[in-house]
Length: 593
Image 1 (tube, rainbow, N blue to C red):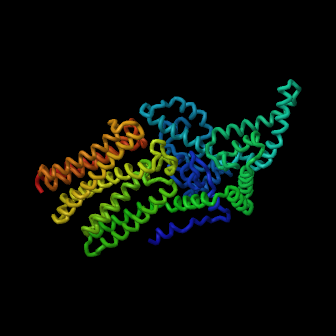
Image 2 (cartoon, rainbow, N blue to C red):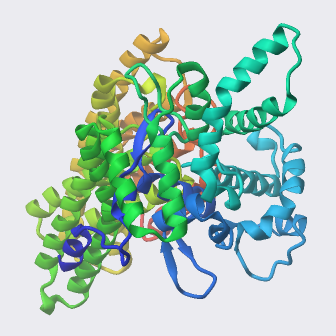
Image 3 (cartoon, one colour):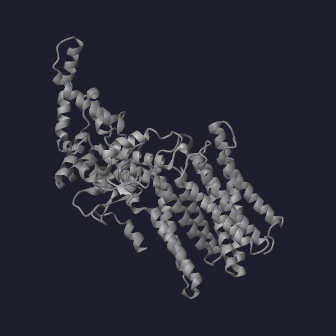
């Protein structure tokens, strides 16, 4: 509890700079307004696969927001940080670097090899299936370098560190040159003699601003008028030729950069306040502040640790019954569930959507539902079984969500147009995801049952597990069936057909059919207790395929979460379930109890 309380406290930065204010400054990415804190974390995750920078001096670490501040305002320093992850020996060889065990490299080490990287990148096939491991790794490195280069011009138009201290002078020269350039252009059209020097400076700056405007899609300059749109500094400066007005925030950011480079803390902090006042919109600031808090709290990471602790306490209570830790494990699980619920609710508030909008969100929600059901089961049968299975499912699904989030993409971003329906996201998606939760919960309970057979656990506990799995199977078939029907109605409205034998649709149907087969086999006494539990273990295979496997096919209208790297993980999971089924099957005939 103390650790959770500590994380809730606002982050304190060991500097007089208003870093906290900088974390809350807004930036528009793909149509969503997010704080600098989120941009820094997402970008660093895409580049290096982690949210901290380990400095060359040793074990010192730099937070993502500190790295972004250096990159945008002191790039010559950021260029020394080893942030680009390279695991492939062929990619290292392309740069003339020996595979000496290092995985992270700085921009200074890579910049001389960028032309070679760009040349090799042109040879990469468009289809993912045709790419080699080398080409995939090279493509990731190229994308990381592209993000890095775009962030360099996040706050300004300086293309060299030496230009950053002269930004205000450059902008003033641009404004002064516009009218003479227009006059010179009028004379040139009329056939009059024109001084080329008048044109040259204007065109040089215009070309630079045009490049930044077209190639940097991070927008930090808010609109002046309501009908205007967000843009970057290059876009705002070019827009002066049309409107005759320069957005003052462009100059404010220039002063912010200059003061940072000069170490002028007073001016830096003052400019943060000026930019905040210029942007206004109190409702937007409230949401930005909350998202910064959400990012820094990392509720799903906190929940993952708490769920693991809860399972350890349950395991100890089984090994050393005299310690009586089951109640403590139950309350620890409740704390984890509360934090998990806060994270889920925070995502809904920030995104303005129901809890499940993509594959990442589905993992979080499946775990949440599973923990909730596990808590209810523990209240009914106080053997620690409900606590244990809830902790396992909560931990596992949040680990899955973490790995899905390693893509670095904005998980709160704008969703696909075909999913842009809060009604169907609140009905079909939630209901069918609850069916997934029930199947996985039953499967984990069945695995514990199998382990109980291997280690001769008492019959009463096995019977309790059997009853729990039967209940979760009934729960799963109800929600899976209703969710599948709702999905068909949504498909009819969106695509003009109720059913199209799409892989994802087939996966949902397979879950319903497998639940029905399990229940009929039990009711018809084709299997008894052990056989039913083994069928529940196989339900994990069916559900994991329907949830993840269908996305990996890369075909169909529902393939929103293609994950090439997840194939081997899914295969290993399926093999593990088959081993459990076969191993338990050797203990006796399926029809025997």
